[in-house]
Length: 81
Image (cartoon, rainbow, N blue to C red; front, top):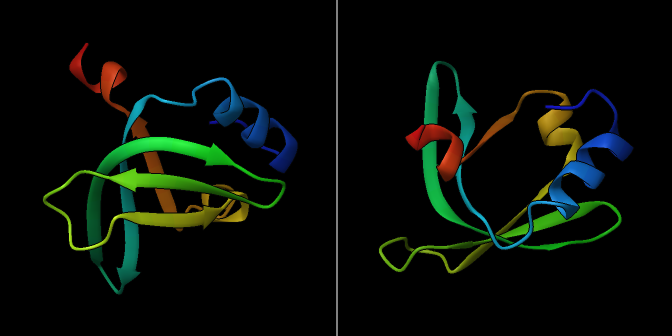
């Protein structure tokens, strides 16, 4: 993943509509994995529409979450290779 907020946003802008797996750090040694599609990007946040089996329909994260490694994003096509 890129190392600046602008680079992260540009990278995600180019991947709109692709399936993603988001791993969220929710606490000490605990993670939560969510599957969905990268739906929208905004100046400070991006939105992931979750698959139907999830409790929520949409979640948003900030680009700083990626930069500070509070979340990790993997694109489904990269995982399958």
